[in-house]
Image (cartoon, rainbow, N blue to C red; front, side, top):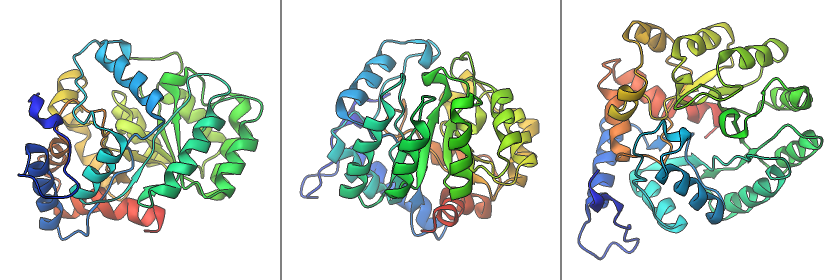
Length: 311
């Protein structure tokens, strides 16, 4: 990775263009060519700074979450610079994917996310959950406060999504039609409860639950495609998939591309910004080089999420 890509954005626009601002121009040209009003990115990370810096330290340390690979954070900027950069990219709506790793943490994160949404109108109000006694109470409170999307991280949280403590909460979210972006695949490193089987048990009980499977379910791509084919409210996000980084680590099977094309109305753009080891533009080019056509790209990069969230 070129270190110069970590240059901060100049919000005033008075300085000479930096490489990262030049990238913003290239991103805009990508969606303008498709005739879109911008991008909708359903998988971006904003969280309390002390939490985010611990996440960055984890990636820096080459832990199991990185699959043992070097994982330089491309957009290691302050929060305000990160929001400005997404706007310069033309991302008209994004999320604050945040997640607890222990009990008693989710409610605090939800309070932070509600405040972030109030001061960041282009961020879809995000909340999270954890299997604990009061989970239904605080998720209901978040929904009543305007939460539009939830994040569940089975790998980091090390919990079974089919845990009985979550059952009524999944029912609440299914009834409310609130999408849940769930990291449940076993990439980049498996967890005790990752993989398709626990999620299949959740969907058997709550078939109308709007799960958005992060990373296309990497590396169990075909199994999660099967769940999307079976359940009409299941969607998948593209986060990191098809990039050079992901293809080296956990390649998508070429035989499954026709199935991915067939689910073109339920695939959503995700990036993992800012925690990605390559430029944001590379995710877009990785999708483009699949050769599935401009109509598919328009749906994935904007229209599917715009319809899901009523933008």
